[in-house]
Length: 112
Image 1: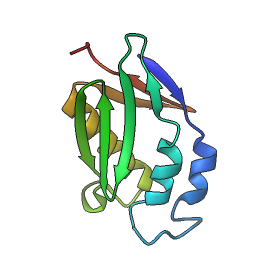
Image 2 (image 1 turned 30 degrees about the vertical axis):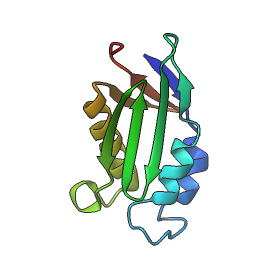
Image 3 (image 1 turned 45 degrees about the vertical axis):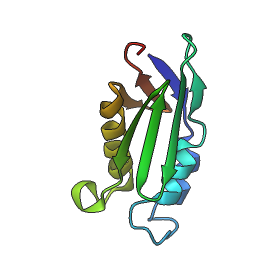
């Protein structure tokens, strides 16, 4: 398990209640929250999360999984939309993601 510090207060400035981004799913919020998520595990595997459009791609070593940010299924709260997409991407690579105050906790699963 790895804990990655995230600045939720900084990212919340981009929620729809404060700034309209036109996407309806909080694209700017997602970008601000996911920016620091590039780490290397103790066993040498690299972990990255990238966003392209509505799609999030989680890469753990050589495994890659995708999750879609869906407003109709998980909205209208941008936080819930992002967390559901991250959980979908994590499940595709055999990992698990949970949120704690100030941290994103990733259980990357066993090495491939």
